[in-house]
Image 1 (tube, rainbow, N blue to C red):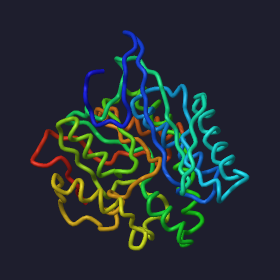
Image 2 (cartoon, rainbow, N blue to C red):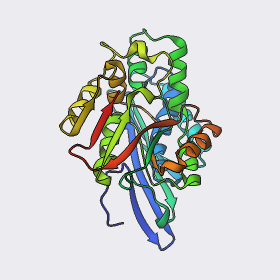
Image 3 (cartoon, rainbow, N blue to C red):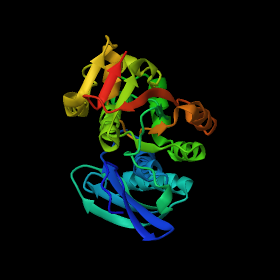
Length: 308
């Protein structure tokens, strides 16, 4: 398109009324169930397409696999089945892919979507006065880390799985319906990093109300060492030079702000008078955790303000 943003997908205009959106994402298992891991990895990759308001059309599997540990490829079959199920749900066709031997399992997708060039959402169009809506609960980093240590309550674990598997077409459809301005999906950089990039891209200051953040039920008890991931510390360092904390926020909720998410929700900037409608629309479609978590201001001395 000839415009640089901080988005996770790239856009190429084919004609006056058609553009393609392309993205790629893959990572090692975050859960032990091979099928569910495939679902999560696919939903995560598809999310970049949805964040730009586009429709996924095709996908290519990307696989790194230790075939010496699983000569019959049973795990691989389940992983690919899970990924295929999410692609079918999204209406996308898997055209093929590429597999290499690797010491560690890795899986994901390269996805191509389509959109009208005039209807693209980026993370660089938030405007002062907008409200910020988040469509999924936070805490997947804590939950998956605790689960690997066999120290996660079953109910909390399954709530996190349901969230990670859920497609972000829910948020996309809801934001299109109300005419939202800007969006990004919340993944490895956590809410902190992705909100920062929206602020930087838009030339605004983003204010987050920690007390309003939706959390995976039960995850608060896991937001401490040894379940704090290395990515959490990295995310905190990334935003610290341009962030101000106001008041005395709950340190546990502050950890959720930094927590790296897998297949997280959409962070959407929308005109204040349409924000409640956006939340209602998202919830009706199945994004039960959707809520308003902050606002956009004219650029101040920092990109991010976090308040209690």
